[in-house]
Image 1 (cartoon, rainbow, N blue to C red):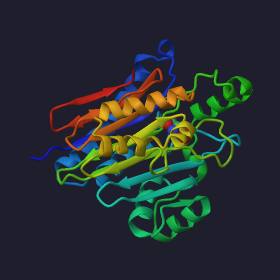
Image 2 (image 1 turned 90 degrees about the vertical axis):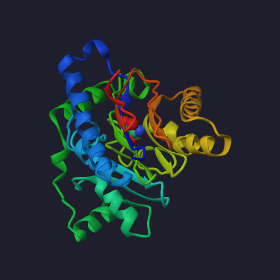
Image 3 (image 1 turned 180 degrees about the vertical axis):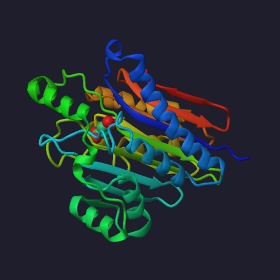
Image 4 (image 1 turned 120 degrees about the vertical axis):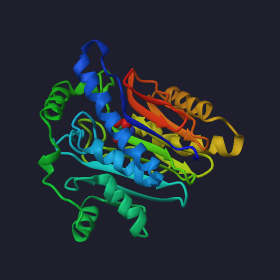
Length: 305
Ligand code: ASP
């Protein structure tokens, strides 16, 4: 069988290890492992890289421990504005939704835009009108709120100054996935609520092709997590694939180059990346990044620290 591989992130962030209980940790690793297994089974049964990453992300969008869908970060008004994006490395078609509040699975709508419209992104009302017209599952915006996200927002709003000065221990928790299918196709995607206490309308790297995600068959696939503004400024995911493509840089070195550049600008985060041989790397410069992988080379992992 040709090599197949999937890697997922459940967000990089400055999680406090001493304040994380074994139960918290188990919830994160069990949740991401469930998504990993769903995606891997699709690849094993002959599904495409796009099918695998969409299915894996749909699972994480309903798990409240991640910052995507249910449990998504809240804006200053206490509402979610969800972003998701996906790219198919076989065709370089890409799709995104930005700032949506009522689409149950933003990643599925991003895929629909990629495959069935001539556009690359739809925002807010435009995305929701199209979603309603094609029968995508809609929910009330309160569906995405959890006690934990409301509590975190209030805590951050009380300490507004500390948070904006970067002193707050911000746990990000966006989700993303990359995959290689048995046909050699590669794909990448992210889904997120963005950053807690974000300005209304703020958009990060997660849904942006080239910044938060990129894939090119025969070269690699990348999905990013972290302080999104820095990944947009460095066009991080495309930069990694370009280094691999034009300079023959290995996937691990290309990722470290970009994370170092981001660090030199004052930003931090993490990456999940694959090359065309199914080599997986998952480096990060925050204290933690929830991550998991499974490949037909026999590697199976799910980790937090
Ligand atoms: N990169 C995301 C954003 O800036 C946040 C995250 O990775 O958790 O919106």
